[in-house]
Length: 508
Ligand SMILES: [Ca+2]
Ligand SMILES: [Ca+2]
Picture (cartoon, rainbow, N blue to C red):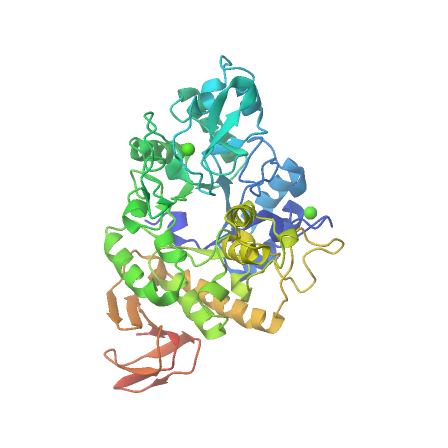
């Protein structure tokens, strides 16, 4: 018996960029509600919403200042509830991003904690009299001097994102309340942000530095993390049929997979696969995942998110056939797929042309660090354009526009509606096929890699994905009926002729 999430195609929505419903240029729950029928037509069964809680938005909502409310930019609690009800009415479940590694420095808990060294909330955060060498994952020291109380506080990301002290059981108890609150609101699970950064050893050893680059050894994946992950997974499962997906800040398969399964979270994001810089390693990585997850656990499958360049640019080189090849892989392989909004219409990256157009703290940090490094403004801009996560955060290109009154909060990309329609139809067909039992069952019947050609059988379907030049393949199956393809194939009793970047599903 499969769990609902094992049969679900998820769709990630970056809150401020999906659809503006009230004309202020920022995406919101009213806009989301309008677009539920669109998502139902696409066929997705789950939505992951990026953070919608009140936040000063230093890191676009990943700096939460109140866990129990909705940010006014996105609407009201009633708007959220109306959206969730509408999604459920269309058979779509909704999971929420949970950011529990850190809070905004504007959070009431931190304001209390920095009143004095003796404050009751002081130990909810991590304080030291002298900093060690740890760097923040955004660059620069991870320690910030707090003048009034004469100690440094720890922030593994931006200065305004202060880490919670998970060694304190009061923190944990409060976070369980947060989970309960949102499950009671009708949400169907959580995407847990940078979850392997939760626990810290208390000896604060300096991280090793090699070639001027710090290796994050003592500030993530610390002893006790596995047990903590198991506890989080178990607590949420004990409440009912909910889903948890963890963001593990790593692209190493061994580090990622160990947190997924019955003794951890349901699944973890496979950045080893989804965030690769080029498509060269994709087949080999999928082959490794096929072995590691042969025990019935599921990996995640995705090629895009709000934290990386869009797959259209990064992996498909702006080619529709390659984008469709990637979509076919993502939606037919063994795993839980996550479509990133706009990917289904072939949206391209947004490239900020100046710092004025930049919204992402990571890009702005990179710019400032490059200037401090002695680079020119022009050179710093190039560094920032590479680092910025704004690329994938441009508003969705709807035929009627993203907002009917205002200029969007971030620059828009030029739409290509004809391409959008072709891509949408292809995704829709793939998602419809995915719902058949053949593609939900764990594992593969045959999994073969022949150079740049990957073939596998799932249920009664043969999937052929050609990541290289045109070639022929022996027909070992005999009767092949083409079900879906991105290019025209020639098939006879002995062979299949596959054009470059061909992707095809045959019924066997
Ligand atoms: Ca709005
Ligand atoms: Ca932490």
